[in-house]
Image (cartoon, rainbow, N blue to C red):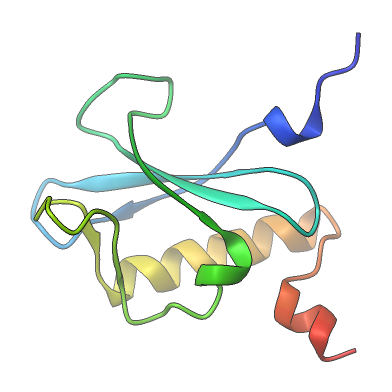
Length: 109
């Protein structure tokens, strides 16, 4: 039996949140062209990655280097600019080693 590539999850990085002691696991899932980036709070072990917080299409956040508010009503679920730059760099590196260009790289072709 083959596993569904859309259901495979790849831990890409762990990045700091804006508050001390808060960090997020950044997980890539989905299929080429429709990749999803999921964020998990590492403080709560609800899943193998932590507590699920939010999910975005990669193409939606690929240029989001100023930070990201993962859940407006929860003050601890924010990633600052440094964390987002780390997350996006790790995503780009993972995609490079797996031969998948970022969406803006496809648009430049």
